Image (cartoon, rainbow, N blue to C red; front, side, top):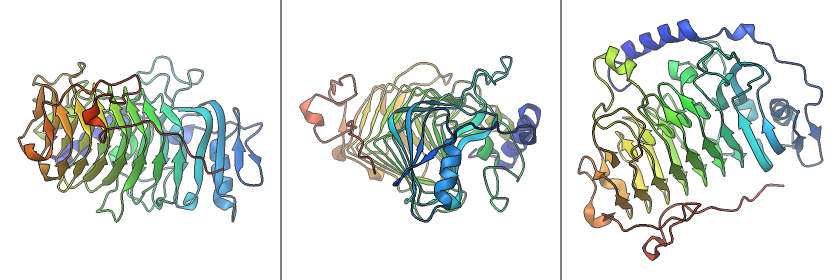
Amino acid sequence: MALGENTRRTFLKLLLASTALPARAFARADRVRAFEAADDAFQVNPGGSIQEALDAAAKHPTRKTVVVHAGTYRPVAPGQAFIWFNARHDGVTLEADGDVTLSAANPALADPRAPSHPAIVNHVVYFGDGISRRTVFRGFKITGANNFTTGSGEKSPIESDEVRKTLFFYTDGGGIKVYARSFPTIEHVEVSGNYTSPCGGGVSVEHLVEPRESVLFRDCIFRDNRTQTTGAGFDLLHFSKATLENCLFAGNVSNMGVDAVGILAGGEFHPEHGSGAMTVFAGAQAKVTRCTFTGNWNGVDDAGAGSTYADSIFWQNTAKGGISPGRRYEIDIEDGAGVKGCFIHGDVDDLRGTIARTANTFAAPDPQFDAQFVPRAPAYANAGYRPVEIKRSA
């Protein structure tokens, strides 16, 4: 991806052409009960349609909140996304009331012979062009993506024809895909148990051009996601920006298989040590504050410029599961000037030697995590992730 982009795109086009299902073959099933309209919000219960409620909120002049009640919600037909936001949805709040799981999987409809079984959508949630911070997504569990891919070319049922589609528009971001000029606020969301190839099992952010803003992730968990190559929990592609505040990364594994795209392009991406739970590509930028990375296959790899990592914990990111032969690392960053106030300890703390030792704590003491990964050691009083109670809009 960083080398030989044209060759990589050609390879992925061939790959998609051989494996993707035609989008036009899919039809939405009729709904018996889509949603209910209350005074202050549209209400969705199990069996209802979240997408139809979102579309109704987009049209309504004042009622801009959709509340989804406890249960597990699945797509009723194969497609590119279970739920999608476009410019017309800007300013809508979609929030969970109780324990709400949004899954890419529907075993009753998936082909049991397909490697992607039981997933039937590319992305659980898609945020497309024209979304600002006024659009809020809050309180959900996102799971079930398994490298299902349908669609190719420039036309898509979930995005405007005027917006350019890369191959990663289709393949990356099994849990959440943020694409083009899209900068939503995503809060109290747990993204877990998703797999994609090549990148971004949990989340993929792809802004296409130098963005004016960043997508905001606050009080989120990225756990047990996997990828063939990079960014198992979070992948920040070229010319993209993300802000992460008080987030937890645990159990994410990249480099599950050979980087076939890189091989065809003449150079694998980080073949010796592999990629982290979070990957930041050249030209991208991350702002990470009070986050915890622990128990992943590597912590963070960042090839961007100007990224900041403040008051965060990188502890024992030495999980097994990938194929890269080198040692595991906590941080692999080209521009380490923005790493400050962090506690770092693992097999290799600072792979490139770019981080100021005087501004951080290396060979950090055991944080003594509890079951929710809250550090009990006094030295960590002002660092790392803490669970936060959800404050709902209604």
